Length: 50
Image 1: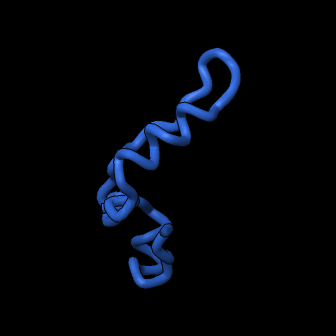
Image 2: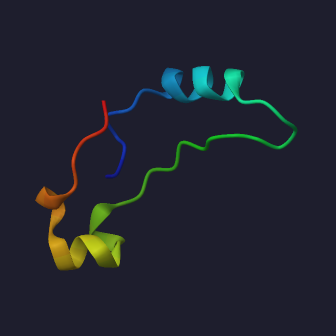
């Protein structure tokens, strides 16, 4: 899964600081195998976000 290492609290904190109506960062979990780029490059080509 993409971004599974990022805590929900991080998203809450970022959303708290975003300015403007309708500005929001969404914590969306996506299976890496479903992304075409990952299929071509392989999951080891994607670095982790910390």
